Image 1: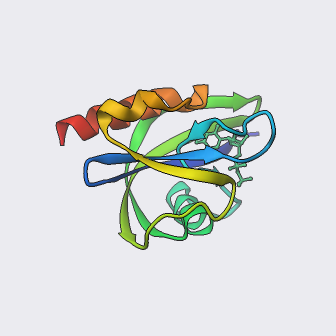
Image 2: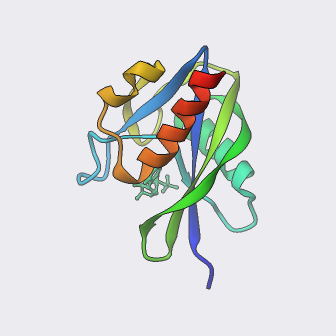
Image 3: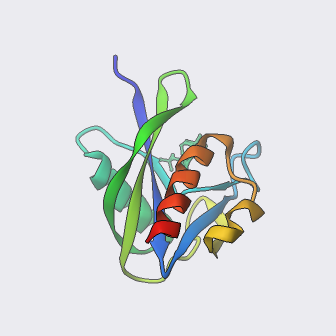
Amino acid sequence: MSDSVVVAGAVCDGGRLLAARRSAPPELAGRWELPGGKQEPGESGEQALVRELREELGVEAEPQERIPGEWPLKPGLVLRVWTVRLLAGVPSPLEDHDELRWLTPDETDTVDWLDQDRPAVAEAVRRLREA
Ligand code: CDP
């Protein structure tokens, strides 16, 4: 059976990257992540990401490019990440998160990212610096 997929967005706006602080489960609460969630059967990764960002942040967003690679979360579950552009709305922590921060490239080390998100965050920051 193929792995299940968690999709996440490196949401970039005005030269900053959006970081979201998890409020649950207890072992992850307080750590920062790229917002997202599980891809459901019948959805593409991009469709799942649009849905998750709508549910979690209340925004309309457009996946742009897949960040190459995928990162294991636990057996049978991998993380895939896209860069994302905001189309409408101001992100707010509606679900799963208790704080959001827009970070400049120089500020991205100021939050405690989930280990598995770090490679994708580093690549998103590299792209932000180049933009
Ligand atoms: O909301 P949903 O149940 O679809 O997914 P979630 O609870 O937000 O994420 C599912 C799993 O993916 C959790 O174990 C998260 O820790 C993990 N995850 C992650 O490692 N990195 C992210 N950027 C997003 C989720």
